[in-house]
Amino acid sequence: MSPRAAAKAMVGGIGVVAGLLGLVVVAAAAIVALGLPAESRADDPLPVPVAQPRPTELVIALSLGDPVLQAGAVRDGQVILARGLEVDLARDLARRLGIPRVRFIYVRPASRLLAAKARPWHLTIASIRPGRAASSVADLSKPYLGTDQAVILRRGLPRLSALGELRSRITCALRGGDGARALAASVAPTVRPILAPSNERLLQLVQTGVCDAAVVPADAVGRLVAGRGALLGPITARIELGSGYVVAVTRGGPIAVAEVDRALMRMRVDGTMHRLVRAWLGIDPARLRPLR
Amino acid sequence: MSNAIAMKCSAFLALVATALAIPSAAGAGTSVWFLSDGKPVPVVRGGTTIESAVRQLLAGPTPAERGRGVRSAVPRATPLLSVSVAQRIVTVDLGPRFAAGRDEQGLQGRVGQLVRTVTGIPGVRAVRVLVDGGVPVGLFPGYDLRRPVTAALEPVQGQESIRDHQQQLVDLGFMAPSGLTGTLDTQTSTAVLGFQKWANLSRDGALGEATVAALQRATRPEPRLRAPGRRIEVQLRRQLALLIQGNRVVRAVHISSGAGGATPRGSFRVYRKERYSWSVPFKVWLPWASYFTGGIAFHEYGSVPTYAASHGCVRVNRYDAPTLFGFAETGTPVDVLDEATA
Image: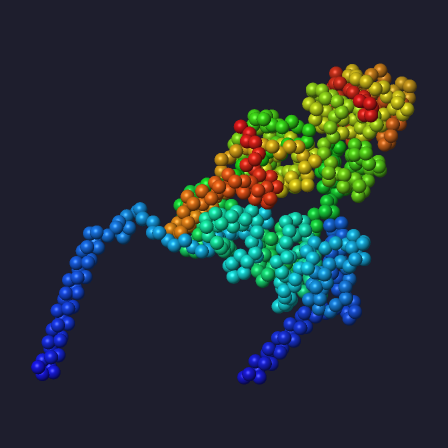
């Protein structure tokens, strides 16, 4: 065989191989189209979760800014020094999820925590209240801290046993705050409530007896009354609003919201949550007797 | 080319060095701020650079200064990581220890000390505080340290104005809301006298340190006796009349009762009221008179000293006399009691 004839024969061989490969590709495509699992179809709204490897580091987004709930020092978007109730809660949560390390990142403004298109973090812990906006972009845990309202009585008044006992009392709350809303919605007082411009003034009104009772956020009551115990009456009751702060779990990530719920439940059951809340807030709102 | 860069670099370093040096008169030293009774106090220290001023601050007060009550809210052994200056803004980077603790006053106080010390140096416009190279967010209540700070927060203590004290007196029931004038007038002094009587303070009618401190911690006066409805309780030792509605003191009134026990003790009722009552034995008009036993009445009188001084009636100061008169409807119970025995 001359070199030219040999070359011709070789080209012919390649053509045959290419043809065969083409057939294989077409056949494979047909098999894939008929037999692949449902998640590859663009019109299917229910993706099957893809098992992701367990991270060795839990990345948690914080908004910072509250000396008691979460505060820190930030360098290049990383929180290099973090502290607060929610920070301690996040660390404990990571431990219970079996993830050895935690990295906090600072997301500013706080609205970006849930609104950002890309969320390169696993969890968001930032006093998030459940709502349509939050639940549309993330899986929300059960509340870890209630946002009920606490009742501070003036000195000399007997403890309350029912919500109705507040109705005829002179009540007060922070102007424009949740306490004022709770008064209107849950107490409906017969005497017009006094709305104070600041927490300082609010406490002064109770201390001096101008108000019989102040309605304040239960998660803040411990801080508000710190150092004033003898000047005020008992803080033994809360008005239940049935809401609280939740953990937002990034969808499609390696952490499932059910795991977070289980960990939070264990923290409640073994007393960890109570210890953390007492340490940071002074008073655990969950231990205040609900008024009905 | 390299010479030009070297020249620029040395010029920059010279600028930084100049900025770091305190441009004050030689030997005059600089003010380092500490706390005394929670209030900021300056202490003069030697040193010629901003860095030395910060180091003096971190070192805390001397034993002698401590003996005089000077304190620092900055934790002991807080390390200084760096000090730099750019455009008259001083950046101070401190170790994480600077943010230790949870006491809000302490956290706020230490930033105040740092800001006062650094911004007090001539030529410094503001101070940027870093903790371990990071920007503190929410670590120090009251301060937004995401940007340079130009002035320290004033401590909460000692900020109350006369109007604030008047508001406290109104809240506690010692003065009518009409007394909120913002000036230290005789109505305020009268209310202060009433409060001082209640709080067992020396009775001078002045808003002195002890009175102000007691006002901060005061709660509403409580009646000695418990009974439903509207009534008046005269406490002879304190020389106060409490106007009570449903066991809640609505007003506490500075009075002067009969000298030498001339006002009878016991439970009575208001039985006669006269806008102006002519006193036959003393030949004087008594405004706003409410009689509750025999010829004994509550009435306005020009002189209401801090002790029992009348012939038996209960003298009421001119600011509260109309209020008491309006409150003491005919039939209103009046309890005159000695608190020591009641």
